[in-house]
Image (spheres, one colour):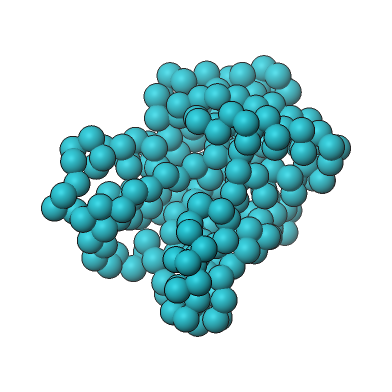
Length: 244
C-alpha cells in the first residue's frame, strides 16, 4: 500500500494517531486533521515522518461544510490524490437527557455525524475519477442495538446515524470501486477515558479485558487492504464481545 494518501480526522491522538503511525510505517502520506490538539498534532506529524511517511497537520473545524471541502481539496492539491478518508473524530459528553441543553445536543451531531457526510461528499469525486478509494467511519459497539442511552443520548443517536450513512454511501459508491465501512470500538484504552472507568468496565466485557489501540488499528488496516476489496457497507465490532 506504499505511496497512498490518507486523511484522518482526529488523527492527532488516540486511535486516529495509532492509525496514522501504522500507515506511515507502510509508506503512506498522512494528513491529520485536528481542532484543538495542536501540540499533539505536531508531535504526531514528527512521528509520521520518523517512520518514513509524509505528514501534513491541518487545523480544521469539519463541522463547517465549506471548511471540510477545503480540507479535502488541500490534501488533493498537496499530494494529487486521496486514497483513504478515515473519520476518527468523535467527541462526547455525559449528561442526563433531561438536563441536556440545545447547544450540547446540536454539538454532538455537528461534530460526530455531519462531518462524515461533508467529507465523504467532498472526497467522492476524486475517488470516483480514479475508480478506487476507501472511506472508513467510526461508530460505537452497541450503536446497532438501538438501546436506551440516558447519559450520552445525542452522541449515541449520531453514532447510529453513522451506520446508516455508511451503508448508504457504500451502496452509492460501490459501482465506482470505492468501499465504505464502519469500525465500532467498545472500550479501548486510547487515553480518552479515565483509567478507573476502564477498569470497572473490564468485568462487563465477555473477553475479560480492555482493548488496545492496536486492536482497532488492525481492523482499519484490513479494510484498507486489497484483502477487503469486496467488503462494503459492513460494521466491524472491535469490542471483545461487548455491545453485541
